[in-house]
Image 1 (cartoon, helix red, strand yellow):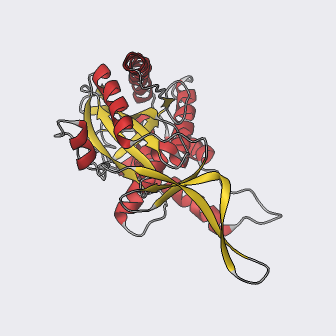
Image 2 (cartoon, helix red, strand yellow; image 1 turned 180 degrees about the vertical axis):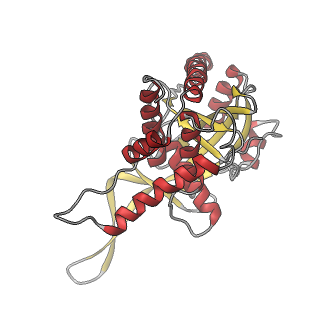
Image 3 (cartoon, one colour; image 1 turned 30 degrees about the vertical axis):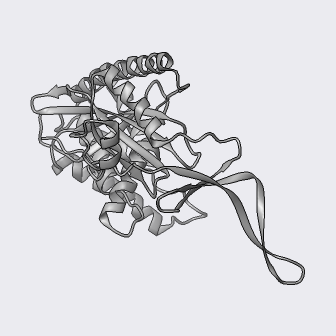
Length: 325
């Protein structure tokens, strides 16, 4: 059974055209770049507006919401152009679009395409891989693609860095059809290599047993207690670190999927628990559960949780180099 933690994004699996995908995903809007102005008070205490040279505000034409401030040389990429580039990558890789939408007010758009075959880690234990393609309207990032793995039996996933690029691979675009296809081939080749590599990694982790004492050591290295200030620890921060370690260990021992043979008492099981914690329990801001889910997934793909997951994976792979205790 597979649940993907990005299910808050609209389901676009039935979209037959790019226009339908943009419509269902809520991406059928354009942006505008307006002069950036500030309100000032002159010497006579009158309010005046002044234009800020060299900067422009990116706004949505449909809602007039401001998405970001960019330099005057910034070249916008429309949602349709981004989706058409993503579609070329999808077709080249034999994938199917599954989800699409945006984060925040539209600062970043997301289109997810699924690979047809999951990685089989063991009996009833699998990882479904998806290519997460994104573009930003606030100047924070270029067109990019990252590989995301969602594990079965638990609402958990992680950003599988492509060749060490934590935010995924940048997608180059020139508007020329031949160049677009060539770029798609480059992206897909890199993704397929990462796909195969992660299958080997999951197999190694599932074969590495972890005694409880070793689990404690790993968790202390991942989530250390705060350093002392003078002669005393800061109790609130110390308690938060201990709670985070305890929550992850609880998921490792009794969480969804924890009793699978490939996860029970193994490094793979601990990694799955860490992924589940970051997707579902990690503290985040938001006025409701839907906003919090989106915030956690953004962190898993692009932020602190992505870094935490990668650190955990690195520590566990180091443990795989040693014999079981």
